Amino acid sequence: MKVVVDLSSCDLHGLCVEAAPEVFEIGDDGALRVLNETPSDDLRAKVDKAVRECPTGAISVTE
Amino acid sequence: MGASLAGLRAAETLRRRGYDGVLTLIGDERHRPYDRPPLSKQVLHGTWTPEQTFFRQKDGYDPLALDLRLGVRATSLDLRARRVTLADGTWADYDRLIIATGARVRPLPGIAPRPGLLGLRTLDDSLMLRDELERARRVAVVGMGFIGLEVAAACRSRGVDVVAVEALPVPLAPIVGPALGEMLVAMHADHGVDVRTGVTVTDVYGGSRVAGIVLSDGSRVDADVVVVGIGVVPNTEWLEGSGLTLDNGIVCDGSGEAAPDVYAAGDVACMANAWHGGSPRIEHWTNAVEQSVHVVEQMLGAPDRATGFSSVPYFWSDQYDRKVQFIGRARPHDEMLVVDGSIAARRLTALYRHADRVVACLTVNQPRALIKYRKLLASNTSWDVAVADATAT
Image 1: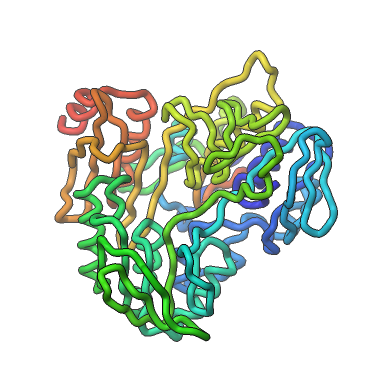
Image 2: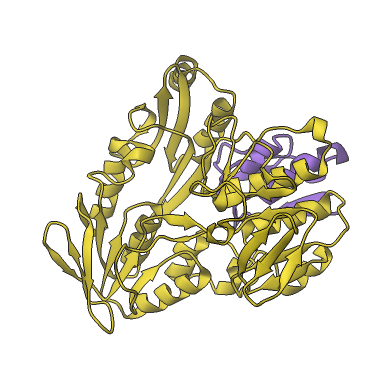
């Protein structure tokens, strides 16, 4: 799967970081960073949680 | 039953978990499911079109294979017959039912509706208010909760005068405490909002169109538009007599069950919440998602693997150039400590204490701090550990 974040929609709620800390992080510059754009399948449930919990719908996953 | 955020997430989760039976999503609004937070922000500011609030484009519903029925309200529930009756005379029978009918604006008691006297809950409300703001010179906002404050900020950003009225001596004090409530008042006052606290609205004048409000201190406030933001009431009237327990919402247990095979989620639900300790009706965005996903997982899961709902409530509010975030639950007399930044700077992290635990965190323009405290709160960290962590450099 490929994780894509629309940074212009990102409002830094940080729910993605909580749901999938292996994939998302807020960097020292205060912006969201995708640590791994192609996470392994065992992280699918966590990534799905990040997608549905993002209040601005900034995260999408393509296969 | 209910086609807003909770209903849509429930439908999505059912399909994602492999449910491939009949799935019906019914909502009383004519629009397809849309997001509410932008209604008091981007839509009012005029920076977003209505379409930008929709969760999915029209063809985005195809993969869900839904029977999507919009613009029709539920009128009753028959638990024995497993049937929801709808206002258009049709009905929907179910094996399992998820109720996510949300809430509606609480009206000013005893005040007759008229043009210019507005609430803000739906997309139609938001578009009406947005259009009114193009012409209005002065708006009265009744209720200085987060909706009222966001409306006030939107008005000021459009150069419209605002008088904001609040019954409490300090707005939002029961939620964020008096010091941070005062900070919000000061911020709005600095942006030119005329704040009147400790007063209620006793009357609205203007016959064919609103012309102003009368306050409990006797003063009259002329206004072209009056926006009422004094809270919402859960949409449970259609369930009276159904057999479900209703108490400011649908009472349900930790698995979200209100009755066998009937679940509730979102703004309408009083769901037992292990972290919180009670069964609060939570009106927050993330709660609607978490609860709807939870009830689907409970519904599809094995009964011996039932888990109780446990979540730390979270909400946010955008006002002017400030993002206020709040996680947890603070009781009115809980101690509040600013651990970073300052109230004067309106950029800060504040923690709230109850007994020996940190129970809530509020940030203003410090989103990274909130992420840290979300974790600490979820694990019921002690106050001393949280404060030590905050003050360590």
